Length: 274
Image (cartoon, rainbow, N blue to C red; front, side, top):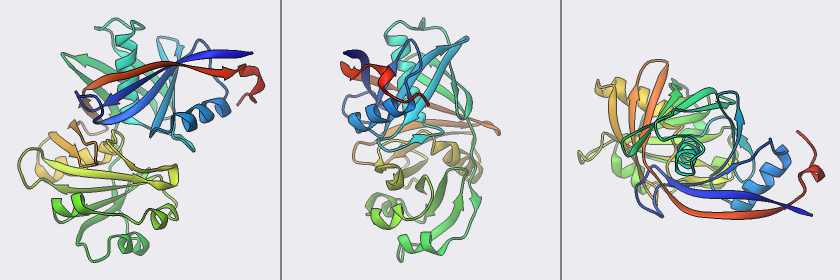
């Protein structure tokens, strides 16, 4: 026998289909086994698949890449909030509350945008020659590490745009991912970034909300402003508004639903409960 799971695919940090960062979102009446969630995420083959279950006055939320569970994900949280309001699980004027591995996270709808409240994860200066070697003769203004990622500030915006990483070498370094950034040179936004996580099964993540938990503190302090606009320069691209509040960071973006489908899976009981 099989059971049906409704999956909604949403492009986050964009107002147009096929841009931003796609995430799959599943909401179920009871928690799924971790092994099943991982297999569904592998089947979807997106940067993240989010799994939701009602809990107290909010929702329990977990995020999986195609190969592993992660502790924090911005774009799939934004996509989850979008789905809850769009499909009527929450009234449009009600805050979405998520219980996660990174504590309580919230999302609010403000006109046509979604505002996430996330923990700040500032990068601390951290020297690692293996990481420097990944960037060859590019000038690095700052090399650091946050709770999750290496944090690399390059001298020029064009260096970030033109970067062609060696994913095999990156994957050998034990870290969730690499945030690579530079100050904007064209005035359309304050800073640009890209994010690479080959060890998590995602060579380049199109738009990475959680990376801005480190980017916002760094650039707010450098530029002397708490509110900034960022562009993630992947092939799909996407915009993130940030506000640095000390212990917290607010991330603002839009989302659009591109697909809804039913996945047929074997009975949940066949999977080991985890």
